[in-house]
Length: 409
Image (tube, rainbow, N blue to C red; front, side, top):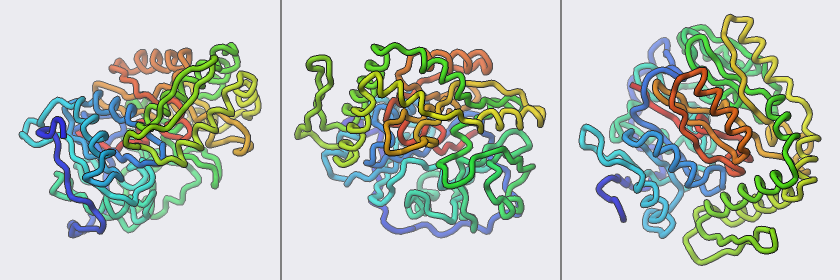
C-alpha cells in the first residue's frame, strides 16, 4: 500500500467493543460551530454514491495535518480499498506532532450513509456524545471509537441529529419542529428554535444556516439562486449537466466516459468499483433526464419558492443576529414531484468553518460558485477552500458540514 507509513488500518468493526465511559455530566456545552481550529475529523465513505472520492480529497487537502478517521465499507484486502486508501493517503502530509499517523481507516460494512454528524456531537471539552438512535446504521461503529483513536466517547440516552444543533455563542440553534424538551435538560445554553418545514420533508438546519461568529450567521437564499439559474443559456445548462455526469463517472472508479457527437457516453470497465452499480445506473439516468436544456430549464421553473429560508433569516434578525445571504436551491429536499427531473440541492451554507478557514461546496455552476465564494471571503476574512460537490453531493442533500464530525482545539 502506497504511503503506508502515514496510515493506520484497524481491524473490521462488527460489534460495539468499547466499554461505556463515565456517567454523563448534568449539562453539556457543545463545541462552537465556527470557533477554534480542527485537530481531528471523522469522515464516512459509503458505496451509495452520496459522496465521491474527489470530495473527500478536497476535505483532507484543506486540513492537511489534522488527524482523520475514515469509516468505510470496503473489505480490508479488497482492490477497491487499496485504491481508496492509497489515493487518500497521497494528499496527506505525514505524521502528527505526536508522531502518530494522521490517517486511520476503520472498516464497517453496514453503514450506508456518509453523514457522521447525524449520529454524534462533540462538546467544548472535546468529548464525543453518541445518539441513542442508529442514524444510517452508524451507531455500532461510533460506539467502538474510543481511546484507541484518541476519542473520549459517551452515550446520550437521547436520539438526535447533530446537523440540527448549531452552537452559536451562548445559544444553540435548532429547527422548531424538533421536540427538544429532553435536550434542554442536557445541553448548556439557550436553545433557540428557528422556523422549519414540517416532517417528512428531508431538512436539516445546517443545509440552510451556518454561524460565522457569535453574532453573524449565513442563511441560504433561493431567490439569489433562481436569478442565476434562470439566466443560464442552453449551452451553459448542457455543460453543467455534462460536468456533473463526468464527475460522477470518475468517482465510480470503474467507469470510462467520453464525448461522442456532443453527448457523453459511459461504459463499465474492469477496474475496482468505488460505488455500487445500481447507484451508478440510477444517478446517471437521473442526470440524463436533465441533459436537454429544456429539461434543465423546466426543473428550475417548476420549483416553487422556498419560504423557509426567508422565515429563518427574519427570525435570526429579530433575535439580534446579523444575517448574510448566500445562494441556496432546495432541489431534491423540496421537489414538488420526485418522479420528474429536478435539480440537486445546492447548499452553500453547508460549510465546515474554523478560525482560519472555510470548506465550501462548489457545484460546477460558475456564477453561483463565485457569488458564494465572494460572500464568504468578504464577511469572514477566512481562506475559502472548495470541495467538489456537483451532482454527487447535491442529490444527497449534503455538504462539508454534513459529511464531517470535527474535534476542535
